[in-house]
Length: 262
Image 1: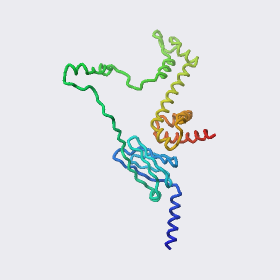
Image 2 (image 1 turned 90 degrees about the horizontal axis):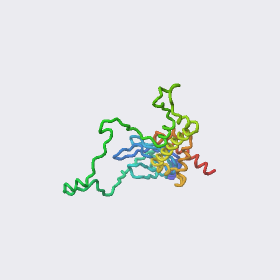
Image 3 (image 1 turned 90 degrees about the vertical axis):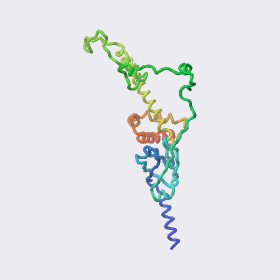
Image 4 (image 1 turned 180 degrees about the vertical axis):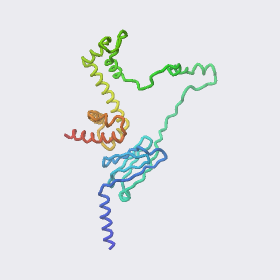
């Protein structure tokens, strides 16, 4: 009877160990536990925690789960048999403490009034707020955007009376449109925006993404440019959540790897 029980227990253990289950987890810490990246580096699956620090991710026995966030130290957890049986895990993260070298801010006062006055910098320059003049506080246009605006703006001259037949309109925008300069500048603005978005994605998500989707350093920028060639690049990556962007990158990663293998 004992032997039969041992055999049944062994078979049940094998059944649990060999299958993929959805692991329910919770991250605990004294700080914010939302939007922490949870990566199954073995199965190349990923998710993020919710506002309560909870997450769900598919796992198998001995899979490696990586927890990554700017404010916490990197942590790896190996899936054990007990986790598979309980289908749950509690993970405690340690805060990342960045110590800075000792620095001196400002001038060191000596006590000599005349000497300290000479070594002290003056006040900051006046701006339009100080004198009550309205000013622009929005995003500063790039050089390409300014050139496009100048090349495509149809402004009546000082002697004109409007945009009707009697208006005197500058011919430069018309010439730019005919010669293709306006189209060229419009494409340059798009390329600048595309390049900026690529660098932003690489800086924010590159480390975590390539941890579960391995790619040589020499090919990582090539992969991101491959993603930007997709017609839906801006739709899935501009002003979107990290999770939505990661899903798009994962889809393009499969295509990129397949193309390289071919």
